[in-house]
Length: 85
Image 1: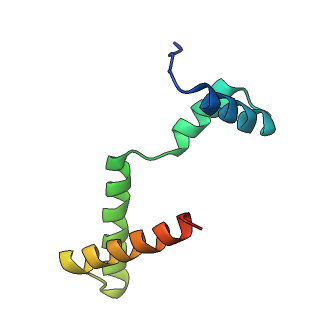
Image 2: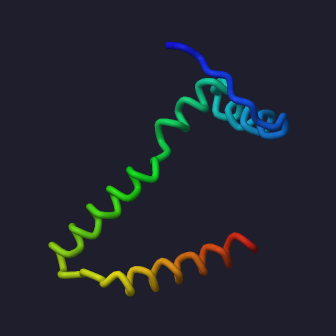
């Protein structure tokens, strides 16, 4: 397996190293595990489609594009409110 060099601010590297050490991992191992657990935008979109299909099959829930937009906006608003606290 080849390694890659990634340039990030020193403060970010130190923070990630501290988090990794607290979990008993090297920074390399921590970043590898992190990369395995995060979803790409395409993977998130695929999961969202699967969730909508499951909801539609289970209880008929099938929001229109406008309803989805309104729900996304409401979620963004709530997340923004919580993030700013």
